[in-house]
Image (cartoon, rainbow, N blue to C red):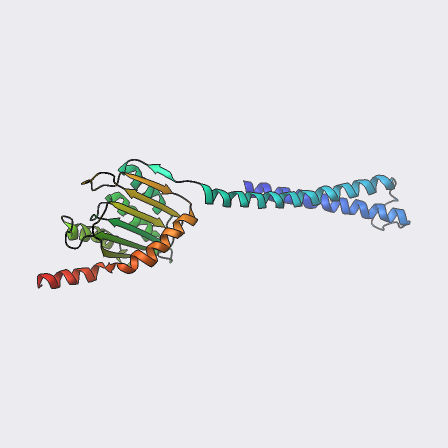
Length: 261
């Protein structure tokens, strides 16, 4: 609707300019005594035509300039809002993952996540949403990537750590997107309950727990449509965290070597 309004306004502006210039040309021709061949008779009221022509041309040009200024001001305002808007406070576990799930629906290129101090605890519904979105991008010929880092104490692994991972990876395998999922393990001592969720350098969620012994992350801050903030965290993820983590497959091999399998 806004695009249609803009087209109509541009057409009206151009017509005003054309009519104004035509009126000015006719008035000028009458002033010098030239009778345009395309007019049936001599046009009187020289002064009126000149004034109307100049006025219409000025109004048309002013409107073009005013619309351009409005567009520029709106663009500056949008950029300012993108830089200054704060995050949304999330206060429940379901609210945190509802926000994460909504962000995943906009995924186009790369999803980065990090869970600190725990095994797989994200709900299955979130994982299924990720799988569906990966399927959609794969069918579109531009498959997105999903990278996950689990930061844990290698000497004190959470219960059912490997079983939880295999179960989740099997979900992606059944969905036909296992090749788009990369899992890394990071040795962190001591681990703390803290999650990071970054979508396409556009959205960011920081989730955490404030109570010892609580595995879930019921509190968080969501930065939606905040590319400046999300980009900074994405660079931190890529340049610092990811480089210190090892692929899950490599971690499995080391575990097998320790157990003598």
